Image (cartoon, rainbow over all chains, first blue to last red; front, side):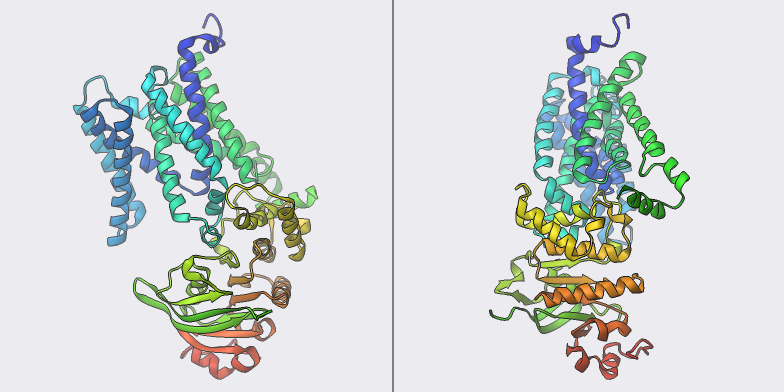
Length: 296
Length: 245
């Protein structure tokens, strides 16, 4: 660290991971709003694990070509989602049980299949990522997905807000609720694929939940939450990368830990919904009423 | 001006081929506040959802001013779900909630115009919510929450209001205020269909009642239809302590 942390910004081989981390952080940060408000965190967890067998088969058949990786991941996620619905609808087994079992099986299958792959593809790359080892192909995939997903979410902000808040009222207002739900799942899988090589399957979840979970403790406006979560995600990625460079700890882990620290700070200190405020003021409803009375 | 009415013909709603509401025929005129009464499982919510276009109709048609519901839900209908169905922690203020009503007219991208802001302000005023406009929605009382949703429907320019148990869980003063507001909306020419279970309040609240138990038992002006005998028929063999006093 002789030339200080600023070397990150002028070392050409660091610009690539920095740029990728910020893009992924922003996209996942925006997407995290939908995951938090639609309570999809566990579903996202399950989907992220389900991608593995699809990726493994794609790698075995076609190597690391981005197009086949995306197709494989999609197919695997789709099969797990479909299987969950079939089991839940045709037996007494409930959806969470079916999903939990299927994603564990899918993940195991993926691990077994990866054993067959050429030696240089280890499972740990997919679990934890390797942002410093991104290839051109990985980077183009991230660009492509970011520039597809972000404009889509921005353009569909209004119908998505209606759908998130109350699907039945949204559909009386002409919002195609079911289509948007599926679209959100597709976007989620895309974002995971984009994050995969950089921060890994497991840690991508942190960037897909952490930003909005933190911002949700501070704001009462969907539009503000949308943008601030994006910027928080990007900022945390940048900061995480700097911390990683400084401490020599893995980048993905540092990014998620930074998000964790932000969340913890918000959890204690948020002036509206933080724990300290709550402890000081007693019951939450009485306290929120008092707050609004005070602000008038 | 021709009289506006919601024409329901031969409406059947089924879940997995088990009918919840069968073959209902009704002509509901605007300018009335109509109570929808019946025991649990009578199909009240299914009926409202079918009118809102939220569940498919197995048979029948619903028409309003020449618009047929088979072509999808229409913006003149506003459906207010039970309060328990709403995530009150959602990051929105009362004003934000009411602005959502304007999105039907604005579409997905068009920005807010002066007229939209005026409609939101008018809705806030009509529902007596001006002082509460910037509150997060969980910091409202139950009655205020109902009024906030009504304001959203007003901002949407709805004419047919479908309310699912709006009075449940409200204290007496809030019930009275909501009752007055519903009557006012009806007097302005809107049609309100309100599912309800507390029979004691019925004569005070509703101009007309629909008695439903899977099928239509009776419909008409409250003073004519809401009788011990009709209630007994609607609620089957259950004894009923809440009949009019």
